[in-house]
Length: 129
Ligand SMILES: [Mg+2]
Image (cartoon, rainbow, N blue to C red; front, top):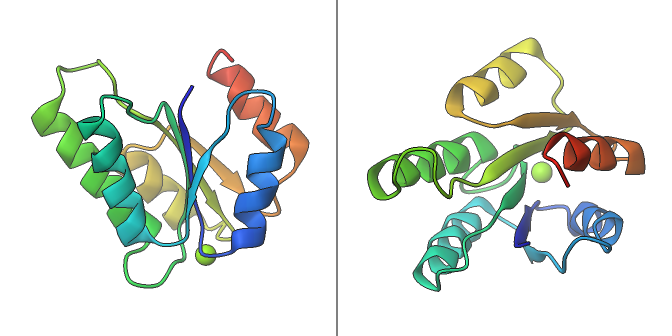
C-alpha cells in the first residue's frame, strides 16, 4: 500500500507515519506544491498513492487546492472509479465550512487535530484495511 503524508508540521507527519507502521512506509512532504508533484510522479511510476493524508493550512498551496488539483487530474486521466486516491484531510480547522467544502472537493475523510491512534485506525478500518 502506498501512502503519502502532507503537512508543513513535520512532527505531525512523523506521528501519522509512526501510527501507520504496520501498514506501510509512507512518503512525507511538507507543502502543497510538493504534494501535487509527488502525486503526479507516483502515477508516472505506476505506483499511485492509495491513501493521502492531507493538511489544510500550509504555505504556498493549501490542502483545499491540492485536493482539487488531484481530483481534476484523476477525472481527466483515470477511468471513472479506478485508481483514485483515498484522501484524508487532517486539520486543526474544525469549522463546518472547511469540513463541508473538503467533502464537496472530494475528500473521503476529515480528521480534526490533534491526531490520535484511534482516529487514524478508524479511518484505516473504514477503508477496509
Ligand atoms: Mg499546516
